[in-house]
Image 1: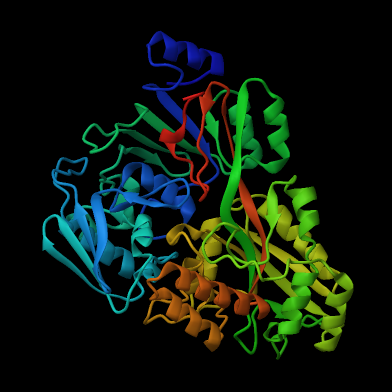
Image 2: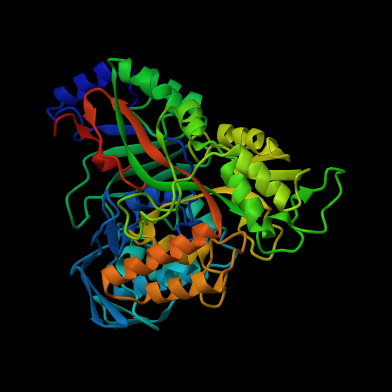
Length: 527
């Protein structure tokens, strides 16, 4: 169904006797394009698509809570064994039954998929065995207690065993391997254009609200807003901050804005003696990595005017950050000083560290993945220039950026703008073990610590927190690890983003804390 206007869409829905939304087709303009292989690139921007048409043992709610999915229940049966009970009578959308063997085959694939640009391996850190006592029971055995494991399982799609053991990326792109057990089922995919899903009448729970949902990949902000204003789509996510007020004032549309748990930060190479993206003022490679000196990292943080970025680039829709989780997330520390802008102190530290004359830096950033990422990075370049870090900004599409940055044995870059959501655990431990813990391939730790920061004292606290069942004690350890890492400037936090989604005026929408755009949260206004 092609929508010409909000009024026309509403009239058609009413004529069909379905209210303003139920039962018709829905078109969503998405700022992201999906990577079709669900185990190849762990990212919230991909998961928001997978959650619509693939099965998950555990589902995730709007506030990152773990909810029953394919598993009707889950509970620890000992300190080191989590048990998940599948719902009886489950079927994939191809009609075949869902069994524990499918779950285990899918998890093994996600854990070990070769050449994945965004590995899920970190979610399995400490998992020593996966067992299926019967067709409806999955047991995950861990070396030590893993209290947040059910939330981690919200991130990993469950496929039929035959698919998990044989499918290639080409099979997912063609649709051959896109077999799920969700509210919707895969219908079609056109690279660079769209993903279409349709109602899955075999779904075990509440039936899907829409007959068909088309996700149009419109990564350009202006084009995405234009599609909304023209009536070509019903919903547009990732609304640029500069357009929020304009859309609010347009009587045809409604803006839905809420807080997000995604914190944007700079990862800085404090590991290598020689770092690849830095040269001296003469243009020659430096024999010494300036970022190994914490004073240089502190100077960079002090040179960032986060309030100016919030006010001038994010139009008030960001929240300056001093750590990698947002207030309200478990493990957030109230004892970390607020991030501040102090150019004089930044210059003093650069001089004290012996870098008063500065150096040249290439700052690596995505273009179109994070809100206003290109503008923010250009602004960071100007801010760093004030402390004589003369910055060239290298922008890349997300797929190119991740291919460059996620190879732990490759060059990776010296400073990169990244982000993290707490969706994998619902608290700080997720980012601590993935982004802050020293890289340990064998233990699946530090998988996303792309600049290889390392501090044994921080590692010790993270390792203890990971296996602490008592939540209060675990969060205390997470806070302490965060405090030490931020004092060490393990990374440079910048801000938390907001969710900004626009819909037709006759529609309502529930923002997800992890920024996902879920089709069935779009509904008639007032319901």
